[in-house]
Image 1 (cartoon, rainbow, N blue to C red):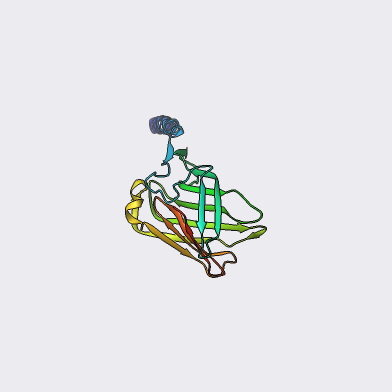
Image 2: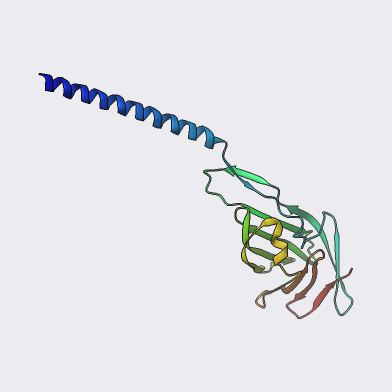
Length: 202
């Protein structure tokens, strides 16, 4: 009879220990959940020192060719990404960028989209830059280039690893096959598929 009481007592102690352990575990889980509700991934804004598109809405860009013809572009939209955040459990990735568009003109060339963007946390190791031209109802292929950096660097230090002049080419395009972009000046030259080079009038 004594041995039976000891078994019962032992089972009771184990049960009490399990209940205490479960309570502690439950408390830890609740505390972690409360803490993580406020957890967010913060994404920096597009750095101002990466100024390859120094434009503003309504700005006019004027280009001329060897025949002294003039091509005008009017900036209809210029946007730089702002700082933002998302929940810690979101399967998301930080993206920062700048882009601009020009007004569409049925009788002349327009820039349907131009962008400079990159992704990653607070560090990145590559940047995408591209242009997308339109002439009347003809849409060109993207002129794009990936600018690789030798190592991941903070957003606000990317400019240290990029050349001031960026050349993008695509001989398979139907409208524009080459563009040249210069830091703090923007698009300074583009070459159409007929070989005509257009340069920025400064």
